[in-house]
Length: 250
Image (cartoon, rainbow, N blue to C red; front, side, top):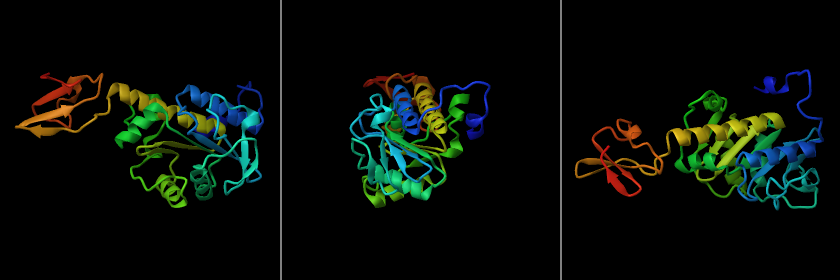
């Protein structure tokens, strides 16, 4: 995929941009794709001199301009910029130390990706775009070991990511890695696409099947097509599906 994104083309898709402008454009585009949980997201962009450009803590991603981009050293210390850097930057500093191949690391809480982090599941791929967020490149870190502003917790998250580039952090959000601004954008967009399509096609159950007086009862999320659940591994016998608090016998 990186080869596709860096292939020569007869015409430029956009003008050459300074690194600060590249990062500002990425934040604004991702905001439009749903990466917009207030000011709680952060992106780092490794530079040739070993420093890192980083998004400011105080601004939402649709507000960021090139002049707002911060610069830090490998330990998260501010070198340039008028704003502050998120306390969660420890996740990025530990990640970049463990993965020198990564140039861009993006973290946020997009709505559909966060649904699956809350469910503790990796969504299936139901179409070709979803498959571009490759299943063998996604990891679920289904453990909470503390706030990622703490070094030990950040290192546990990084260890769980390993050599993957897409991570669902349980009950938290997503972490997406790239070797360029373009690859980070591509992975962010396809991961959220995969989560969104899976949610609409096969909504995440809000409870598991249980047995009451010999009848298997299943609680399903709103908008669920009830009959889809009959015969699934979760509920293979006669079922009563509870929809909106009202029992129905499909």
